Image 1 (tube, helix red, strand yellow):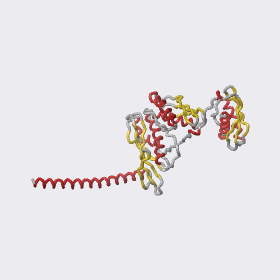
Image 2 (cartoon, helix red, strand yellow):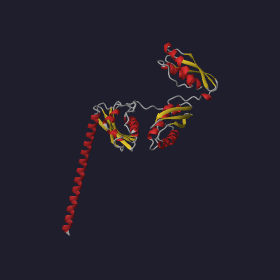
Image 3 (cartoon, one colour):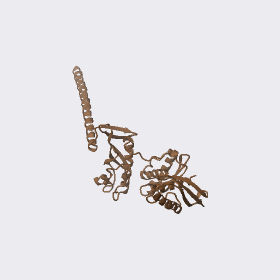
Image 4 (spheres, one colour):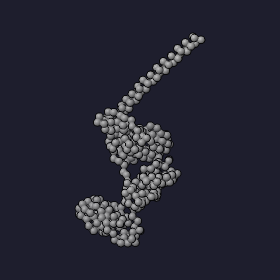
Length: 362
């Protein structure tokens, strides 16, 4: 019996020592692995961004990125994962963005796109088209033949994810995306357009009392199954949340983005004038030209603009004369204010159009 106890104690001691040694070995090994991972990450960041001296893993609003800093502590590069929805499901990719907001590299992590078609997003010739782009550039690149959905998803996904990454980790080195202060908008109906998956989407946005009260999708020809979801959900979310950047309809990301882009486009323009609702009469308005204030008189009869007369202005005569001759006549002929400017006289032309708008908004 004593011998059994003795052997049992010895076994317990051996197990305890083994556990301790394993724990110590695991701790040391883990530290070595972490050090190796950190060293490899710095090496990768320095390969992408030669100015990088130190790196930091950061998390902002649920998104993570590795941010590299130069010797002065300024952001020299960002490495972060992005995602878009392609034909076969999620496409995951890494974006490397340098300290000027320029895309340095794009690598595909995983995807389920069709072999020989959508799978060509992995090819160097395709990915190279995005290098050097900033959020202010067009992301319209050469599409992959036979893989339109994949191609459009990549274009829109990379642009959208790049903006999101820069907004969180860029620390102000890129220009902010355009925004609209809804509370400062004049009452009225606004029209705009945005690009969907297969077509241009147009919307009408109604503003009353500094709030968006309605968003109507007027036209668009995207795949009906998905477009119907986007039309039903996105406009209502914009009205409910009183902002443009709302969640997309599930499975209809591209159509949803087209609607949101159309709303943003609409609210960056003056409200649409309904000439049929303007009483007959002559209206006076002012707009800013190149060197002076431009004054116009606009006559409305039977719901139509019948004449536009430039009453005063002191812009450079050579260009102002062209604008005075061409722009008023175009407004009368086309029955709208947003007409083409006179060639070489853009600022004077815009001043006349602004004056007409101000006249008819009284």
